[in-house]
Image (cartoon, rainbow, N blue to C red; front, side, top):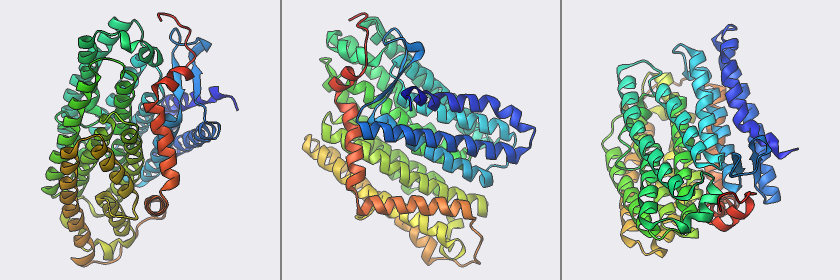
Length: 495
């Protein structure tokens, strides 16, 4: 199979979104099943790409119009992109299935189009090899996310969307100015050539440009202090979309930040930018965990927990070491699984019982035992208990942080983990040891997805070596810049 087929990862959701209005005439159920079909095909293509990259050890590079970069635009699907494009597609498929039950607000056709464009934007951010096209895909992701946040047409949804638009606009401006500084200094937008020429940049220009890029991406990556939009958006958005935000939209922003950070590691002022990111990441963990402790809405509580975990990943990426990057990627995988599980389960409860307030979870173990079991698995994993997947990635991040000499950051993470344990175990106690109620039907499709995700959490927790080896290859794809430059067939224009 030709590597050019990988371009379908971008083309399929785009073309699929354009055909939604034609499907609309067949009814709302037809649109939902069409969404499931498109995401299923996308998952199949992503699985093939993953198998190709990991079996051959070579990236798939797609060149638009057969023009070699930097003249032509290219997609670069290495170990990291292959792994996370698969996660994007698989989570999108699961949430498309959940949408059958969770989405009733009209217009369903607009929801399906925005859903596919959100998947497209995140996939493009991860796969592109061009910094300006990274901005384009980031805007596709952001605009789709703004609209989906407001989709439920409530007052809180409109307010959350407006906050997201304002902060997202500021972030996009920062990012675009950062790109302009880099382009003005180096004369190229191709990522491989930027890495090749980064050592020639003026130290001050590089420092300012990279800082602006990080601040711009910090909105999408939910880093303090630019993450004020996130809890409101997570709470107000449709339940399947909340899971997508946490599982991969934020990961695309984190990846873009890490990729650009390491591509420019040859600049003189690189270390000071890393220190800035370490401070932002540690504050994100600390502030979000204590904010989660005060929440009475479970969906909002898990949103804050998700933000804290994102801060932990950003901390790992900011250490500037191979062990830190590998641990960060491993935690990205584990976090995507656990938060998809938690947001799916909590959304299922909210759809079934009419809301996600804490009191609705009283006695859930008696009313919806399978869903309560899934939430329990996700909660125990998120805290970092041994024999569950997050334990291994948290441990590796802590060891990498101590190895890099940031003992204070490791101490903050440990304190925050204790706080996390308090609110998650409070929820578990409420579900299993409080309240009464009659058994409620939980639905076969959602139950199977919950069991699959819960099984992944446990299997990776008990047998972490395979997932860790995959994460190491993906981490090396980000950290080993020399190999990245070598893999991209540059024409040498502007060098």
